[in-house]
Amino acid sequence: MIAYSVIVPAYNEECYLPDTLDALKTAMATVDSQGEIIVVDNNSTDRTADIAREKGAEVIFEKINQISRARNTGAMHARGNFFIFLDADTLVPAELLAQALSNLEKNDCCGGGATVLPDKPLKPFYQIGLNFWNRFSVKCRMAAGSFIYCRKEGFQAVGGFSEKVYVGEEIWFSIDYRRWGKSNGQEFIIIDNAPVITSTRKLYWFSKFQTAVMMISMMFFPFISRYRALCRFWYRRPPDVRRGS
Image (tube, rainbow, N blue to C red; front, side):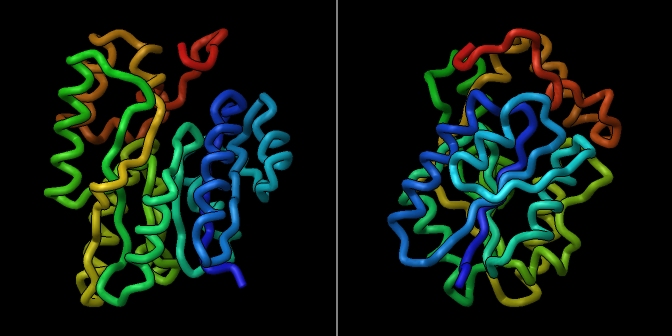
């Protein structure tokens, strides 16, 4: 019986997806519960879907290139009672998976997220920003999009991730889902002792100025998240991108 489903939205992720799935399978082998891996091919033009199948994942196709829609499409096909949403450039330590599932098995937790660790050392400018996010995440109980865990019933009750936005869907989900958990006497828990490891690639695809402008714009003008053309930071793949660059 499938107890939990790991849902991985992926758009042109042939470089990072193999390591993500290998690490995930290693972590899954350390827990007693049976799980499944669902990779949502979000209209990729590379070998993303082929790699996912080669690694033993179920592949679901979603034509519309939107992160929230890809997450929701994966959830529609998931068989587990617990959902874990994982980015395609992210590595899950065994300790984190075990703790997330342990939390969900308790009646006082509805789900949550995890603090974030970069896959390589960051320049001071970026490290300050990450440190701020991790503190904010724990204090305000906001899950980073790279790792979110929840209950199927709660996910369905809040309507999944908002498809009105192209970025920041994890923030709106955290708010709505946390409210649902509270109404059911359950806490939204950010795991801070086993951080998820995620890629820093976007920080090197764009300049500090471009990154700062985008982040500040999102903070003060959140309405831009409703327009894909204004969210190129999250959707654009620079030409001739290579792993690690």
